[in-house]
Figure 1 (tube, rainbow, N blue to C red):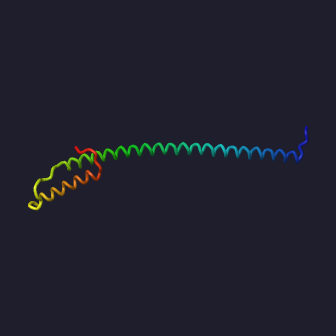
Figure 2: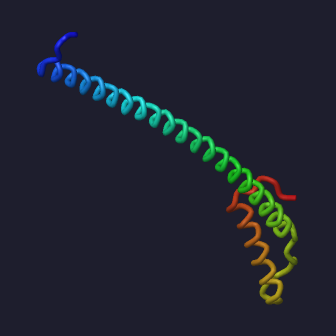
Figure 3: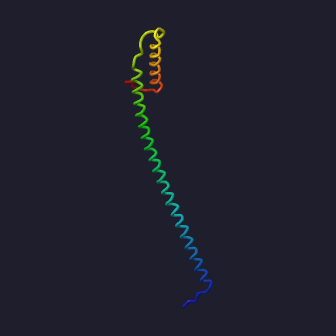
Length: 114
């Protein structure tokens, strides 16, 4: 039976320490790589979700804009009363109101007026 000397035991322990340390380094590196891959997938998933939400918000905004332009256009199409405003204060108010409706339609750049 071979004799185990102190130097052989120390050498065996040193090899064991290097093996365990190397295994620990490899496991840490592997875990780090897996975490980075998960993070990239999470960021990509969040970006896709954000794009979907932006598209939905854009569509909702266009729908609101269309409805608003339709209603404003309807109001702008109502003809103001003809005649001089000086003789009838009510007529002056309605003529100013008509100009305001037309200004809103123009200011909002509504394309179609019903």
